Image 1 (spheres, helix red, strand yellow):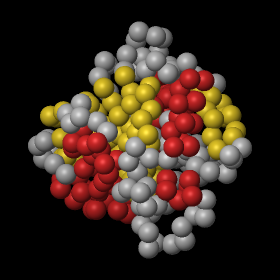
Image 2 (cartoon, helix red, strand yellow; image 1 turned 180 degrees about the vertical axis):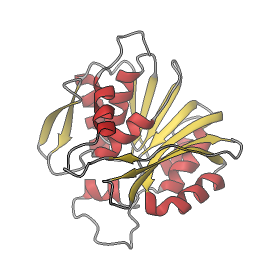
Image 3 (cartoon, rainbow, N blue to C red; image 1 turned 180 degrees about the horizontal axis):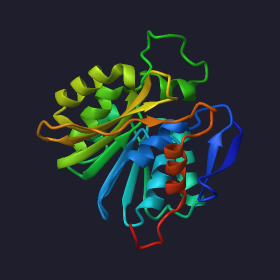
Image 4 (cartoon, rainbow, N blue to C red; image 1 turned 45 degrees about the vertical axis):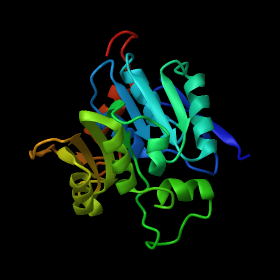
Length: 250
């Protein structure tokens, strides 16, 4: 079994176990967790939850939520459970081992109000596959793709249910096409740039099941300034996620 690290994030608000050489969450997970906007007391699922980082942040941000994580890799599912317990959130976070491509054998339909996912987005024929199996499955479309996750979300969500995701900006056209093909209308998006001089790196998208055509484009997010420090907006995201509401708020 690979060695693990215990990392403190968000000014000590959370402590997260991660495999030392396997899959480790990155900034895109933080960006998605911040982009997600939810109502209190609803049922939410993270499809492909990895070690549970987004679930942990949302459980802290929204103390009344019941959250479910679906993860195909048993070792990561176990790690997500461990992280939930370590942060005293196991009573509100449920981790289920399973494959999103077989979603109908795992959950009943129309059972969630919102779904989110940070899906594998490297095509199998687009470069060398990571030799570490855990990283390869998390990053490459080996055991699931955006289309698979959207198909699962459509089945799981109640009418007018909401979807949140992050995806490479260069695949935006494909993303919108797949959203609409799944009956989920893009309603809000935000481009993410590494710095003021780079091309767009990621796109954050919110969609609604059965929604009508109307897309809001938010101001872009720049991660680094010209001095290679976090921009004021990016620092504000970290600060906002670090100050969790008291239990009962949200």
